[in-house]
Image 1 (cartoon, rainbow, N blue to C red):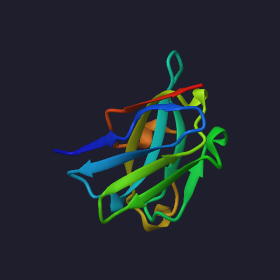
Image 2: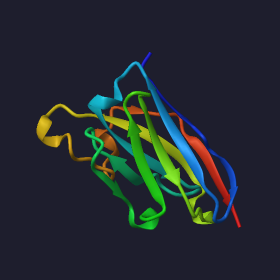
Image 3: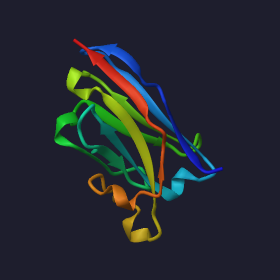
Length: 131
């Protein structure tokens, strides 16, 4: 069964840190770019950041730049979202998604503002930041 499973969410005080994991089964993350998305209550889902198939290119939405870091561990078939200096505005359900990369020319790229290109999605992890 092909699936992505997020873990590591929870309740944290403002200024704290959490690390979300996105573990894959039934697919090899080395073949995929990975995006992280979030959906806050009453809002549309938005892209937070992404990491290329090669793992050496990342991109982030302005609101999290300098606070969030995406990394990839191919040996563990897992991608991480390290979130530091969390703010109440970061409260949301966080999703990881996998985009199969077919062409070598695109393995150093990733896209975080188009959900339709992603092939697989996790079930989501709740992150709640209290002030």
